[in-house]
Length: 74
Image (cartoon, rainbow, N blue to C red; front, side, top):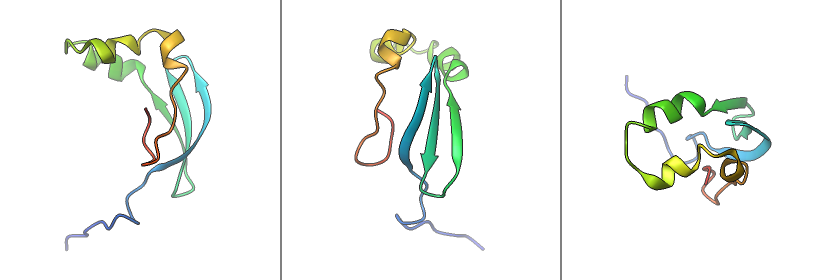
């Protein structure tokens, strides 16, 4: 049986609770608290040559992450 997700079922971030060097603690609409650790993502993204993404490896830029209206990090 395949479960199709409706927009109401798709998890999204409702609040950023804490920003640490390259880790973000988020509250999700499911009630879960999750830590998103970016160090491994940075290692993977480093293989790409995207200048915008590479700026995030500087904590002075990273610490200004915010939540979009869609419930995603920006």
